[in-house]
Length: 363
Image (cartoon, rainbow, N blue to C red; front, side):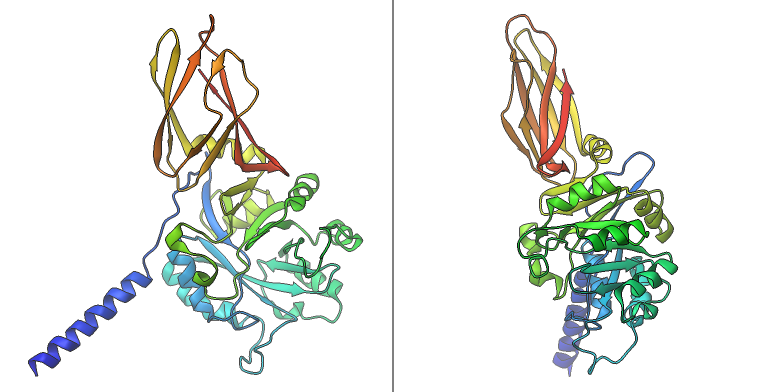
């Protein structure tokens, strides 16, 4: 009897430990911009209520463990391969997730994916009040229903080879949707797919840059977290941590896509963001050199590359700042120079196709 009690107690303890581990939150250490809070969001994912392989509440648990603030379960309207087994309307995955999201303080946004051939292709509509009216024979009517609900609508994976096998193109149908107010953003990164063409479209047409996982399987199937990998997501620079705050930021285009080691966004956002990522302090100055320290205070990897500068200043060619690490940088002073600019490019802070963020440290 005593042995049985010990065994039962051990099993209960083991179960408690597993539960605690399952609910352990890994906060993503990144800065807030002045006047804003940086929210980590994934606006594109699937469950068994369309073509995903997990129950909706699993997506909430995954988001919590990875340190996300907000998610949207965007089930396909037109493609539901499990519908014989999962009988429901298009709002059900959202409804099933609400309680879990509230318990874990995950902001849950109602959304759906309009799933059509090219053109126009696939689009997500988020901040819906009811997903069911989006089920329409004609794609234009589906977009009209989303617009009627004041949804935020963005184009998914424009460079997906299945729909655009040779070139990532902007079609006349996209111009029509854009002009009619049915496109407010574009995915510049989707899962493992990176689409630099979409960056320029966002800059030219004032569209929000979006990064999403588009996850279908359990999240750990696509990402090895033990190796420091992370899902593709969107950083939203919001005035407050709320659904209202996210929507206002999206409408104001204050977003950046976080894809692998890249952060993709507008220069006016990434410049102050980088300044918040590092602390710079002068350590020593002599007639011949200046030594200063740079500390990366974030979970991000920062890649620096020297650019055009005064040739009388000699400093690093390339440098990688690993997360939460302090580096010492020596600048040699030649001839009679006493001060100047150390110019470099943060190559993984992408502000335009093929262009990183130019930055200067003044001595």
